[in-house]
Structures are given as C-alpha cells and as structure tokens.
Amino acid sequence: MISRLGLVLASALICGPVIAAPPQLKLKLIDKPQIMFKPGDGCDGNDIADLPPRIFRDVQGHLAMFALHFNNRLLRGPSLDAMKIDCKQSYPSRFNREPKAYESGSWIAGTWTRDGKNIDAIIHHEYHADQYNRCRPGKTGLACWYNTILAAKSLDGGVSFQKPEYPVVAAAPFPQDYDQSRHRGFFNPSNIFGRGNAVYFFAAETAWTGQPHGVCLFRNTDLSQARNWRAWDGHDFTIRYDDPYKPGLKVPPPCKPVEPFPAQVGAVVRHRASGTYLAVVQAWKDDKHFPVSGFYYAASRDILNWSEPRLLMATKSLYDDACSAGQLNSYPSIVDPTATGRNFDDTGNEAWLYWSSMRVDGCSHTGVPSRRWLE
Image 1 (cartoon, rainbow, N blue to C red):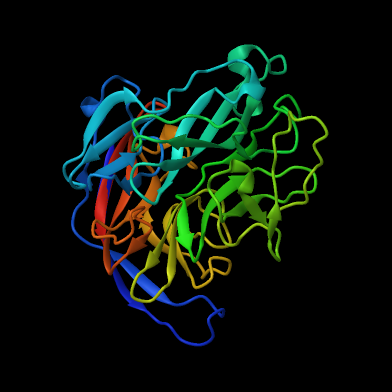
Image 2 (image 1 turned 135 degrees about the horizontal axis):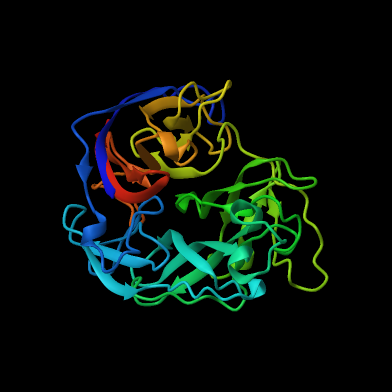
C-alpha cells in the first residue's frame, strides 16, 4: 500500500557562507494519511509497494510513477490523485541464474528525464545465489544476497526500458560468490536529483575490506553512459565501481561515506525558496543519531554536509522485527505535486510524505503505499 501524509516546511534559515554548517529547519506532518494504492489495485499479486515512489512528468504532461515490485509496472495519470496502473511490465525481472548477466531481480529505483520521452533509470538489482544453488551449503537469505546498481534507458516515456551494453553503475569489487555469509554490494539508491549541471544519487553499501560501511554519493555529468557515474572520495567524484566480471579489474579506492545517513536515503529534494536540500531516511533506533525507529530528515546546502537528523514520523520499519511490529512503514519519499522540475526533485513549502505501509501477518508483510501532507 502506498500512503501519503502532508508536510509543511515551517522555517528555513539561510545565512553565512555558501558552504557552512547545515541550515536549520523544521518539518511537521499535517492532515491524516491517505492510501494511494493497495494490492487489490494491481494487475497480479506482485504489484505491491516495494520502493520509494519515483515520479517524472512525461511528454504529454502526465505524471508517471514507479513504486512497485520487480515487475516494474508504471502508474500514470494527470495528477498524483489519479494514477492508474499499466499492466505492461516496463522492465521485467528475468531471474537469470548467471550473475554476470545482471538479469535477476530488478527494481527501477530512480529516473531522470529532460524531455519526458527519453528516460534514464538506475536499477536496484538483486542476485540471490541460493535461488540458483550457487550459494554455500546451508546458507540462505542475506548470506547469499549480492546487490548492484545498474543503468537502463527508455525511449518511449517509460513504457519500456532496455539495459545498455555496459550496464554497471556501481558494483562491489568482487563477484557474487566471494564472502558469502552476509549481504554484499550497493543497495537502495535514492532518487536521482539535480544540482548545477550534474545529477546525483545516494546508495547504501555494506562494507568490505578497505571500504567502511555507509552511504556513497554518486555524480554524473553525462547520463548517456553508465560508466560516467563516479562516487565521492572525500575530495572529489573520482571513484568508478566497475563490473567485477570484467577481466583486469582493479580494486577501486573506498568512497567516503556521507554522514549521518545509516543506510538507504529515501529521497532528496531542493527547497525552491531557499536552495536548501532535504533528505528523508528511515532508521532504526541507535545510541547516536536516532533515539527511536522511524522516518527522519536532514538538511544541507552542499549535499555533502548534513544537519543532525530530526524525527519526522516514529514508526517501525523493515529494519525492525516484523514478528512483533504489527505494522511496518518503509521507503519514505518527499513529493511536491507542484514541483517545477520534470523529475520532482524540488519542493515548495508544502509537499507529501509518501511511504509504503506493510501489513504484518505473523512474520510476513505486504506493502501498501501511503502519503501524508508535510510542511
């Protein structure tokens, strides 16, 4: 189920140098949550909310949204209140047992377009080796999970996407059969968002030898090639996480994780009036930044230095124990219906907080997207 809840930007203080301490601001939730899409609205049982909504305006001026499961069916309509599902699969998950084919479980996790017809996408790609008897004996689940970020492109407004010849945007510097005992690789990219003449996204990574755990920031100044994506090294965007199945691959230096994000960043939007960037994340309770589990937000002027997270909505998420939660809420995203950009990466003083509400039955859950007004 996709839900939404109103948000209002109550204050944004802009002062001092262009790159300085992150700005102070306050967001608050208003109104009651609304259900935007429920499993019964889908084409089959796989049409559940399984990632933060990614929205763009197509060439006819209609809105197009990806927010569902690995069948990647498109929701489209004249407004956010009138979205209808297209049962055609825009990017089918082929579940190819060969890991170097990069054709297993695939989710369209971010989109970017300049004209509404030619759409560049980043793909959250899951390879579960236990599904193909290619994991260590007795290992299942996370121990066999290998994840990459891929590129895809549509020439027809998102109706269909194709994988390029060299699709790898970000991969761990080793093949899927290495270090099988935990999940590995790059996961859950944020939306693609613009700043200046470049586009960016955040992606969580699980750490490996030489690479600390955290969230990497990627930049691209030319989306025509997936190879153009580079990660932040602490000084510049220089790091290319290439295909580990290519011969002669050199292990890249580590990215510099961007604080204070614990894992996946749901979305980044720019506040139009102030130029402040807002990031929304889901987090588990810890002893540092997150006193309770829930959705948090942070602010930045330069997308590298972020404010201390503030609680937006306390809730159990997929990071918490499903067996005792009753309901889980995950995959938050901020969407302004009046966004001026075609890719909905900007916001005014009011917007919607979108998330996926998951009903828990025993220890299993089913996603339902929701939204609520923010200010």
